[in-house]
Structures are given as C-alpha cells and as structure tokens.
Image 1: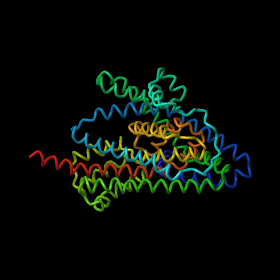
Image 2: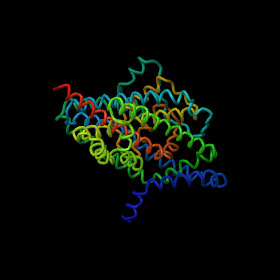
Image 3: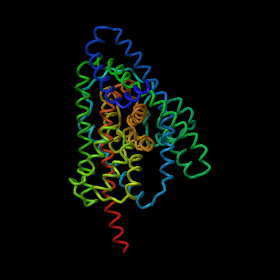
Image 4: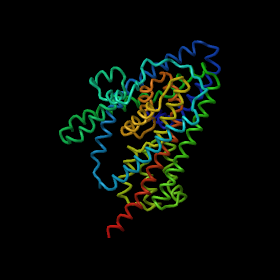
Length: 411
C-alpha cells in the first residue's frame, strides 16, 4: 500500500490529466444519457470543492504572515537584496500592466457562455476610492473571515506580519503557532490534492454536459493565448533585461538556463528547481554564489510575474464568460492583492489554487469556476512556474553585471 501511494504521488500529474480527459468524455456522452452520472459527479464534486475551500482562508492568512516574517528575517547584504527586490517589483508591475491591458484589448472570454452554479459570496464592492480604502481595515477581523471578505483578511494578515517583524523576538511564540497552523493547512490541502484526479473528473463533467464541445475548444484557446502571453513576456522583458542591463547574450542565457526551465515546467515547483537554478547560473553564467544564494530563493518566494498574468487572464476570462463585470479599479485591487498573495504562495505544484480562490471570491465569480480552473490548473501552472524561474535567473544575470560595475566604481 505504501508503495502504491508513492507511485501515485509521483504520477499525480498524469492522473489529473486522465481525470480531465475522462471527465470530458463523461460530460459529452455518459451524463447526457444517464442522469445518475450527473447527480453523482455533482455530489462528489461539491464535496471535493468544500474540502478544498475549507482551508483557503486560514491558509492564505497564515502563509502571508509567514512569508512576510521570513522575508524580514533574511540575513544578507542590503545591496543584493535591494537590487533584487527592485528588479522583481519592476517586472511584477510590467506583468500586472500586461494582465490588465491584454485581456481587455482582445476582449478575452467575450462571446463565451458558461452555465455554472451561482456564488453565495458577494463581490468586493468598489463604490469609490475613499470607501475602498476605508473598507481595507477590518473593524472585526473575525467577521471578515466569517463573511468571506478576502481583501480585509489580506490586509489584516499583512498588518500582523509586519508587526511581527517590528517586535522581533517577542513575536516568536506567535509565529511558531502561526507556522504550525500554516503547516497543518498545507498538509490538509496536500491530502485533498490526492483526490484531485477524482475532483477534476467530477467538476468538469457537469460543465461539459451543460456547455458541450464548446467548453473544450474554449479552454484550449484560452491556454494557447495564455502561453503566448507567458513566453512573449519572458522573451521581451527578461530577454531585454539580460541584454541591456546584464550585458549578456540572450541566446547564451537561454542555453544556460534550459535545464532549470525544463525542470520547473515539468515539476511545477520553483522551490524544487532552486538547486538546478543555482548550478546553471554559477557554472554556465559565472554568477557569484553570494548572488544566487540570495536572489533565487527570494525569487521563488516573491517573484510571481507569470502568476500575475495567469490570475488576471483567468479572472477576466471567467468574468466575461459568466457575465460578471470587473471594472479597471477592481482589476487593480485584484492585482495588488495578488502581489500580496504571492508573498505567501508556496512554490509547490498547485500553489496558485489558493490565490485564484481568494481572487475569485473578491471578484464575485460563480462558485463553479473553481472546478473548471482546477481542471486546467496543472497546464497553467507548468508555464507559469517555468516563466517565474526564468525571471529569477534573469535577475541573477542582471545583478552579476550591476555588482561588477559597483566594484569598478568603488576603486
């Protein structure tokens, strides 16, 4: 039995793909003819979604606090950290701009119609800038959790996280408790994820049954557009930064990082790629260990450029497909919230699911979109993780040149 679970964990991605394919076939052929198939998948899919949503709020709250606390406790030279954070924030701003502009320019999701269960959570209200700012601070944090106000939960977590940094040692007992709760949440989520192949099968079947073959065509088109945005961003932004800021050949850079990029694409884990990323940059690009030891782990924590693009594309796609209006001010708030979420998002497969659940809640999307998103999450995550890792390594290449220039200037 232990050997089976080890084999199953190793091949979970293949199992998810299998569940997706079988769910599509069941929706097209079985659910149409046999009503009990639809009833059974709706029941099991609902149980799966409830189990997944059960830990979203505590996981988001605890992971953001621990992410902020860990960043504040990094022992390193301020120069490298400062340059790295400036680079990451700059590219994240560009990625957010891409995420806001492109989906609107191409009218992503317009003309697509999905029949889904309605959400019982209201969208974050955007009445005015002043009212929005006033509503950021929760007067009752417990009520924010109970009412599903994700924006207030995010702000409350940020306040607690930065306060823990400021009081240092006195916050250690609280951080230990929060870290333990965070680990429990991650463990529960990881257990639920074992049932993802079944969950994907059960959640995609009713959607395909209700919407037909157009669902597959629509999702495939969405993935193609998303990947064009991912790698277009990587080629233009990261390629330009390596060439003009890092004074390196983009072709040489691409050849050097290929093992890390492919590993990230296959594992969907930036954390698991750290050793390979370090080896690529140190052995092939000649970047100092002092730089890679800081930038690569830091990037795995805070550099989520591709996730910003992914989240904005998915929110706009599902909003348009489901007839939910998402204004530009709301989109800006969602992207700012995503930056905060990325600080605590674990660099593991499926780490973006919690972020999407939080943002979908804020946008007031129908509950059914979670099932559809989860069914294609692995395909999205593969490209997003690959691009994020390329961004981490591009930062290393830039800092190699910047630190060298500073040494020359200091002589």
